[in-house]
Image 1 (cartoon, helix red, strand yellow):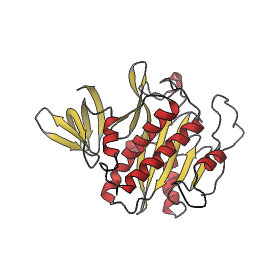
Image 2 (tube, rainbow, N blue to C red; image 1 turned 60 degrees about the vertical axis):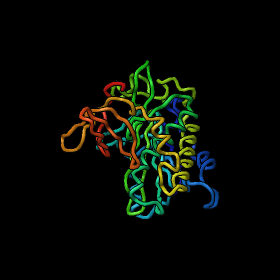
Image 3 (spheres, rainbow, N blue to C red; image 1 turned 180 degrees about the vertical axis):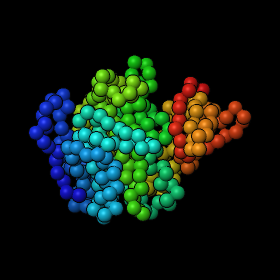
Image 4 (tube, rainbow, N blue to C red; image 1 turned 90 degrees about the vertical axis):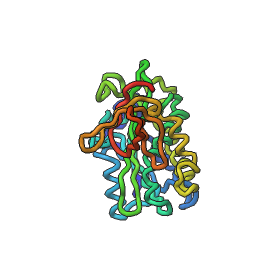
Length: 289
């Protein structure tokens, strides 16, 4: 990837939302001479449809190595799960994707990567932004606004060729109430974050991702040995709640979310006494358990 800073005539049009400093991000995060940390390159673009789509396509052409990071100041066709759109005003959030190639880890354990990314984002933001965060299984970042649980971010993982996974992250940072896409959404600013400067926030999240990814790889992808399974469960707002899982094929399951199993699935205990692991589907929080 060829580094280039995001810049256009509107660069300073909103002084409340200054642009990211790509050169400083690269100095602080990119490994020196190919040695050291995870990140090989960080590119910041002014605008794109989806950083995930761009990085998946680049990886498929052999144009990106593991640790390539693509950041957009604005996404016009950002993607969530189930092909949902994710849009926000320019420079109002963190919108980025990272290429990972854990080729030495059994593919069966790659399903933990979106959950690992969720843990990294939540822990990184808790430190860097000074705001309480929680995770809704499998991949939503929650904050509290006015006593209500609100979605402030999400994670999407996509395969990139035979040997890679692109993890994409979108986080609302400075969105004001009138800018929210839906009333149930939130932002770090609305949740009372002590810091909404996106440069240190992005740096904190990427360092947290680098740390968790290294731990997971060192443990051979084992979620228990790496501490990932326990940490995810501790920060998961879904556990202990009565939930409805809306599953493929127009099927739904209602019960208490009781555990995250070794495959990263949500285990739901139904009223019939059955413990059903859910690997994919929409989860609706109904009430506390």
